[in-house]
Amino acid sequence: MSSKTEREPCKRCHGKGQIKMYQHVIGGVCFRCDGRGVEMTKAEIAARKARKEAEARRVILESVAAREAELAAAIAAPARPVRVQTPERAAIDARLRAHRVSLVGEEEVARREAELEARYEEDKAERIDRARRALELARERAAAL
Ligand SMILES: [Zn+2]
Image 1 (cartoon, rainbow, N blue to C red):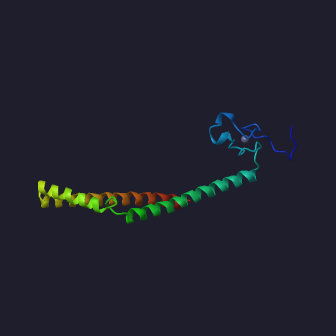
Image 2 (cartoon, rainbow, N blue to C red):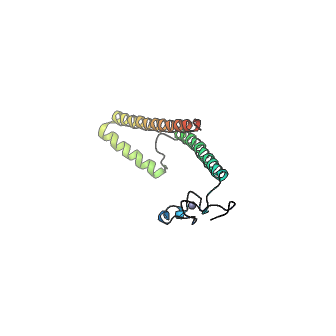
Image 3 (cartoon, rainbow, N blue to C red):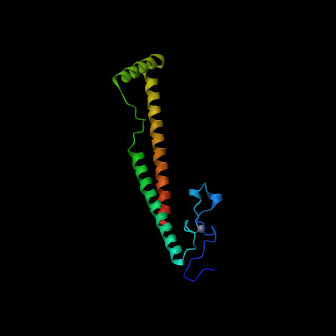
């Protein structure tokens, strides 16, 4: 039997610090004793709890900052997908447009272009809305800290 000053071996890993059947999870380190193989004191358990809570708070606060950045990016992003324009591409685009005009007329081509533009704007508004909701959720979690 161990003396009073000696620590009891960990009740879960029986002093080994590892649990074989959990080897696939962080090398099977025992979560009860953090791999030390001995039972922790109340002060150590409290310190570990405080560390984990601080870490959880930090993660939540970081997630608020990340969601804020995502919302700002969604607002700043152009509605239309960015495409590198070269003189060659511009010439091809102009030829394709002229071809479409020859098929359906200038008015119809302009109407379709406006429709496409409106859809890009709608998609952008949806992306902003999603980012705003994600930020609200993150802020709610942060407020609950
Ligand atoms: Zn253990």
